[in-house]
Structure formats: structure tokens, C-alpha cells
Image (cartoon, rainbow, N blue to C red; front, top):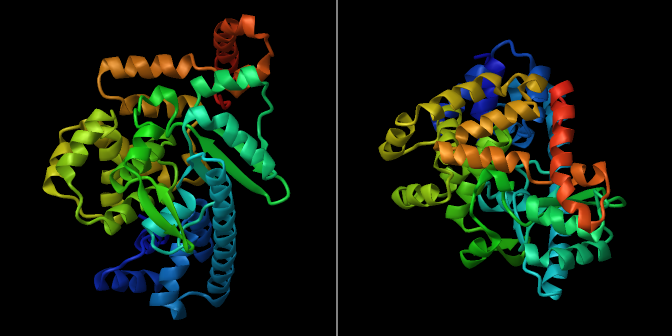
Length: 387
């Protein structure tokens, strides 16, 4: 492992032991490529953590121009996070005024709930979870606040999309803010049956910048983190940091209960993969019970090894849509789950299908063969393109 990567991993956590601090000092004294280190940290969205730990432990060992650059980026991140948090509070109050329950997650919530410092996590948008029945009203609220949908769909097309997708993006051009409105945590083909109504029944209060709101309960949040990381192929270190920081901030987990719940939610392999990555890369402690479960599933070991080898390859770490589909397929446990995954991946209509050709409602069933045709044309001829 290159010393730059080792130093980045050592700094990508909020709490350090004296041994880890000493390790950081020893690494910082080596002949490092500091520009490569800062660029890699930025790519992985962990620059605030890198600056926070270097400034606290060994600022005299960091070239002044690098430390100044990190300090500038840190301040920019703080201002952006505070601005996004303020806008989130505005939106939550607007939703509450219309009796629409919206659960914030990711972004400000993770910074506050598990990092316990709004400045230590990078985020760039707002994520809200609602029940699908509230989508139309939620959309009207966002429109009244100056947000516009990224994809302009007719009402009929939008209703179809709600049934076959899980999120919709809205943009505020003047504020340069993106809001992802979710009515499910993951795409339908992931078969992750943690629905908004289930989450609502288990919600926990959170004090966000002096304002109290409800958010995802801690046990469910760990599943959400691991499913989101798996959905994107564990592309960046930040996703693994989220899991590691969750474990750090929740030392008294009921692991037996978590494993049973994960099996019920069809995400046990995703959970084990996220835990293994957090342990091997960021030294998160795991009980023997969990390690035995990890060792009993060779697929988890293979996927973690593959993830580790591509994690620090920059742009080459990206998986194209076919590779990502294959990665996600391997996370499904059992042939029935794999078949459901493949069918769910192929058949649900998305906004690209709806924009490919606009059909009257009577002909909506034709979207399914048209989708197959579009996928064959795109993947048969241009396999590397995004779905």
C-alpha cells in the first residue's frame, strides 16, 4: 500500500488512538506526494477528515501550501454544509405545514448523528424520504419553494415512474441545490423491503441545528448505509467511513437482532460486506459472531477484495452499468433472489424510457418492449454507456 493511501486511511475517522496518532506522524514524515494525497481525498469525499486530523496531530509536518489548501477546502465545506442544512430545515418546515411526513437522511443527518460534527462530512444535496402516496403533494411543495424536476414528465408518465423507480431529483437553479425525493430506499430490483411506512414507525428524534425532526432509527440506518454502498459498488471511501463512524457511535449494538433483521430484509450479504470493509480498511471492531458469518460466505470475501483493489484507482474505479449490475447480482442470496433481481432490473420503466417516446396512456404497456429494444440497442452496440 502506498504511504499516501495509508495516511489517508489513518485520517479518515473522527476518533484516533495514541497508536494511530503516532502512525500518522510517522507517515507524514515520509517523502509523500502531497498533491496526490489531497486529490485522492477529494475524490473520495474525505478531505474534511484528512485536514481535521493532520491539523490536530502534525501540522508542522505538512507543507504549508498543502495545509492552506486543505484549510480553504474545509471552510468551503463548512459553509456549504451549513447552507444545505438551513435549506433542509426550510423544506422540512414546509412539508410539516402541509402535513406531509418527510424523513431526512444522508447529508446533514449523517454529519450530526454519526460524525457528531456538521463540518466533518462532505455532502452536496438534500435527501428526503416520503411515502409514495404523498409524492404529488411533495412535488407541489418543492415547486412552491422554487425547485423544478430534473426530468419533465407528464402526470401519467410520472405515476408510472413512481411504481417502477424509487427517487426523483429536483433542482433549485438560483440556489444551486439538488433535492432527491425518495419513496423507497433502493431501486425496486434490489428487493430491500424496508418501506417508508416501516421506517416511520421506528423513527428517532434528531436535533438538527436547534430544530427537532424525526429521522431513520439507528438499527435501520446501518442497513440503509450498507444497501446504499452496495447499490453503488462501494465506489468511494466515504461510504465505508459512514459505516465505520456508525459503529464507532453505536458501540452497544444487538448483533443477533441485527442479523435476524438483515435476513428478513434480504440484505444480510450487503450488511456483512459493509462491515468487512469498515473493519479491514478503518479498523472497526467486530464481534466474533459477525466474523464467523463473514467467513461462512465466500462471496463476501471475494467482493471485499475486489472492492479494495479498485477503490484507489481514481476514475478507473468506476463500474459501468453492466459491471455494477453484475456486482449487485452477486450480492443477492439464492437463485430465486437473483432471478427476481434480473427481472426487476430489466423490466421497470425509468425516465429515459418515458422520454425515449411519449405514448398515450392506452399504449403504456408498449413501454416494456420498447425498453427491451432500447437496452439491446444501447448495450448491444455501446456496452459501456450508462443505462
